[in-house]
Structures are given as structure tokens and as C-alpha cells.
Length: 209
Image 1 (tube, helix red, strand yellow):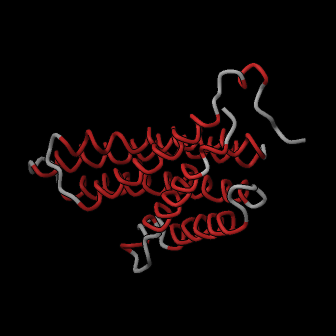
Image 2 (cartoon, helix red, strand yellow; image 1 turned 120 degrees about the horizontal axis):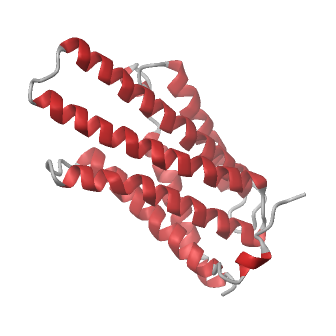
């Protein structure tokens, strides 16, 4: 039996608004991710911008589940949203811990052994967030396989990139794939969510209001 949106909530959840939220927050999350990776923002702006990524990812994922559930409710879509909310919390912790430790290390107040220990903590948080975002991506892919607005292309590509992200992270554990001689699939996962976000915005007007 497939889960459905509770009747009491249907009156307050606007699918068109959910599609706007999913699309806009998803695109903003990808833009923030690219900004953090590619652009030096300074001591004040960097932690502020980094703190936006996790909440944007979480909000976009919950809204995407609502959009998917309007036409094809699925348990995998619900689990995907839950996994990505957890991923958003973990990546926020990872980024802010990383920035705080780097700031302390730049002042020369950490011994080499402590730096190594904190680096392992950062790697552990990095892997934890990758586990949840990989799970969320695979589950959203499953929810999209037979969805009338997405279908097999979105579904299969999400499953493949999510599974590949998961596999590569554990192939080099506890070192991140990029540091272990493999490919960092983070940008590819981000690109998948960007395309999903654009697709969601494109069919927003076709949803009931």
C-alpha cells in the first residue's frame, strides 16, 4: 500500500508552490555548493554561505517529495526526503567544523598530531554526509522511475550516480576518493539535482493549485 499525503495536509500544501520551492531551493543549493568549492569568500562570508547549503538541500528535498507524491506517492520518495534532510544536517556540521578547525590551525595553535586527528574527524563527517546524500539520490531515483513527469532517464541516472558515489567513498575509506586516486562524484550528483530542479520548475504550471 502506497503512502499518500494526509487529507488534513492536502488543504494547506500547494503542489505548485512546492514545485517552486523544490526548484528554486535546489538550484540555490547547487549554486552555493559551487561557490564554496570554487570561490574564496573570506573569513566572514565563507561560514555564512556554507551554512546555507544544508538547509537549502533539506528544504528542496522535502518539497520535491511533495511534488512527486501529488501524482505518484511512494515510500522511496518519503525515505529519500528523510535521508537528504539528514544529509543537510551532516554537511552543515562537516563544513562548519572544517572551517573552525582550519581557522584554529592557521593560527599555529595545533600540533601536527592534533591536526591529523581533526582531519580524520572531518573525513568521517564527509563520509557520513556522502552516505546519506547517496541514499537520498538512489531513493529519489527509484521514486522517479515510473513517475509521469520524470521517468526512467531521471530514475536510472539518479540510481547510478548515487550508487557510484557510495561505492567510491568506501573504496578509499577513510580517505576521500579525490585524495585516494579516484574521482570525486560530488559535482556529478550536484549536476543531477540541478537538472531535476530545472525539470521541476518547468512543469510547475501543470500542477494543481
